[in-house]
Image 1 (cartoon, rainbow, N blue to C red):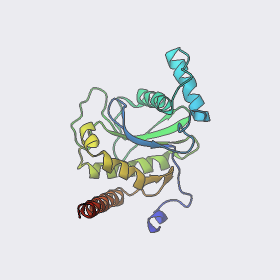
Image 2: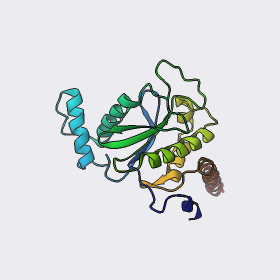
Image 3: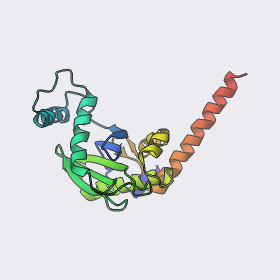
Image 4: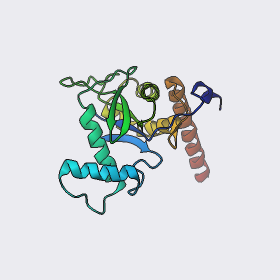
Amino acid sequence: MSHLSVLPPLLPRVDAVLILDGDGNRLAGKYYGDFLTTTNSSSSRDAMKSSEASSGDNVKSSVTVEDLRGAFERQLQSKIQGIAARPDAAEVVTVMAKTAVFCGGTAMGATSSGGAGGDIRVVHVGPSTESELLLAYLCEGMYDALSNLMGGQMDRNMVLDNLELVFLLIDEHCDGGIILEVDGHKLASSVLLRDEDEVDAEAGESGVDGT
């Protein structure tokens, strides 16, 4: 694939790509590999221990993957809340021994204007050994693509109203944790083209069913 040539020789991998609102709620996202995708992975055990430490209670034996992801995202939110990261200057934090970089958000005491600096955050989570600069580059590219698709209105309602496009964007950007494309304009164009193709396909199927 020709567009991969713009990326480093060794394709970067990420553990998760998340779209969060200003309160840290996950509006869309995907986890990859063994990072919080099962309840018996090392990352899941770390999440259980962390949840126990923060709550002071024993985590229930029937804990689910979604419970563990929620615990991770709450810790993430506790570190990034009140921080606004420019679209071209991602911020970096460490959560559960993972490196998390993010763009967007609203600064402490500020209110979201619903524009390009809205309350939505794009987060990339990677291993602690991954380059922070590389993760920031990936995150900034996806934030740019999302902003293009949302018409610059990076707020919760706009994202929720366009979740299909958001998930298409994640899939165009990353497959199984491997980054496929970073350029924001290329990503947005690919998503819109794929969306049109799926709409045309659905219309064709409806036409066949109706005959």
